[in-house]
Image (cartoon, rainbow, N blue to C red; front, side, top):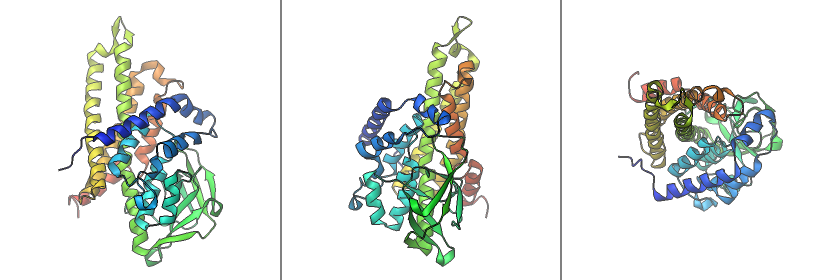
Length: 354
C-alpha cells in the first residue's frame, strides 16, 4: 500500500522552496507578465535551479544530479502551484529530463543538472502518453520554449522514429497568444538536424515516460493551486464583513467552502498516489496518472472559480491575484490531456471498455 504521508525530507524541501519563493516572488511580478510579456524572471529560475538545486532533482547521481524521485518533485510542484511560479521546472526538470533519463543521454543530463541550461520536449502541450505524433517540421502549442536552450524532438515514424536534441540555433520560435502568461506557449519549427539520443521503440518509450511523468506530477501543481485558493478564500470569508457579520458565517458560504475542502483533500490524495506510484514504478501507475489528471484538473479550476466568486467584487479586479490562479488552473486543465481524455484512458485501463 502506498504511503501518502510526507517524509521529513519532503517537508524540509517544501520549507526551503516556500521560504525562497516568499522572499523572491510576489503576485505583482507574475501579473507583470501579462502587461509586459518580456518581463525578465530568469533570476527566479537561477534561485530554484542553482541555489536550491531543483534542476538536478530527477537527474541520476552518476550524471551529476540529486538522484531524487517523483515524490520530492511533487512536493516542489505543490509549492510552485501555490505561488503560480513562472519557472520551467515542470517542462524542463520533469518532462524533458525524464525523456533524457529514459534515453540515457548523459551529456545533456549533466548540463541540465547544473541549472545553467533548460530543455523542452517538443510535442504539443495537449499531448498525453500514448497519444502524440512525431514532429515533421513545426509543432504547436509547446510550453516552456521561449527561454529553453535545448529542444528534445521526436521525429520520423515506426522503426525510423528518432529522439534528437537540438540547440536553439536549430529551431525557430514564434510566440503564441497564451491564456497563462506565466507558462507561455509557442510554435517550434525545426531547421536543424540535432544529435540523436534514442531510436525506434526506445525513443517512443522515452516520450511516453516523459508525458506520463508530466501528467502524474502536474496533478501536484494543480493540488497546490487548489489548496492556495481554498486557504485564501477561507481567510477572506472570515474577515470580510457584510450586514455586520463575517461573510463566512452565512450558511451558503459555509457549505460551498466545506464542499470545496473535501474536493481539495481528495485531490491531495490522488496526486500523492500518482507521485508515489511513479516513484516506485508501481504497475498501477498508469491508472493513478489517469485518475489524478481526470480529477485534479477539474478541482483546481473549481477552487479558483470559487475563490474568485467568493472574494466578491475585489476578486473580479486585475489587482487581486486570484485571476492568475484561474488562468494557470484552466491552462493546466487542457495540458497533457484533458480530464475527458484521461477518463477515456482510464476506462480502457480498468477494462470498462475493450
